[in-house]
Length: 247
Ligand SMILES: [Zn+2]
Image 1 (tube, rainbow, N blue to C red):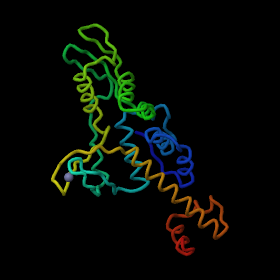
Image 2: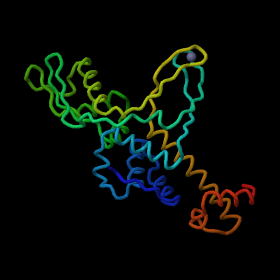
Image 3: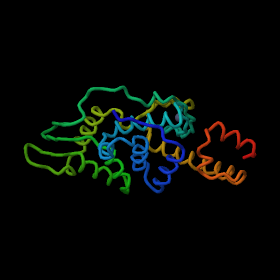
Image 4: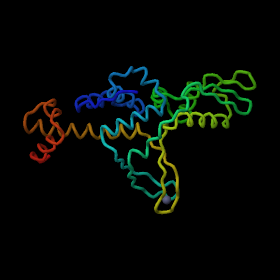
């Protein structure tokens, strides 16, 4: 079990600053290192994607609460939908399926697999395009591939086998790639929309950090306080002072 703490505003601002320009999947690893300072960074990097997401969901709850609000477009009629849901809609119940030593036998192919890790996701985030990211994941996660006993490159697998491989991974790590069931009130279309907790949390933290800097600016300018002074104020007291200075 990874022990999570709730660092203060100054530490989160530092983490936010250190993530500037990084892809959300890369930033996610740094945020988890901030939230889990006692965890071995190599162990966090090696977490299967779904275990990473479970921790990011816990971190989101600790930082910003249980309610989510976002928008999406109906894929059938393009109507903009305003979504509100609770954090439990994203959580997949814990399960006992093995996470390692995954195997697939299908149509003469025999594969040994491992699950994509947090580090894999951070690395592929810097690839241009889905095809290149997919190739990188296949190379990383397919330990051995054989066709009727003869070695095959992971990049030389038929689409049907790659689909089965994705199914094996999804069954072993169902928390990876949360999805929300949606129905469009306009046209009745029902679908499952993928939800990227790393991207969502990074956007929220980015908004929060920019808001806090404005608050520091307003209070430091007005009272002559330093940044650490302002950040040390409990949120309710900071809000009260901001109201007093009309910010
Ligand atoms: Zn629709």
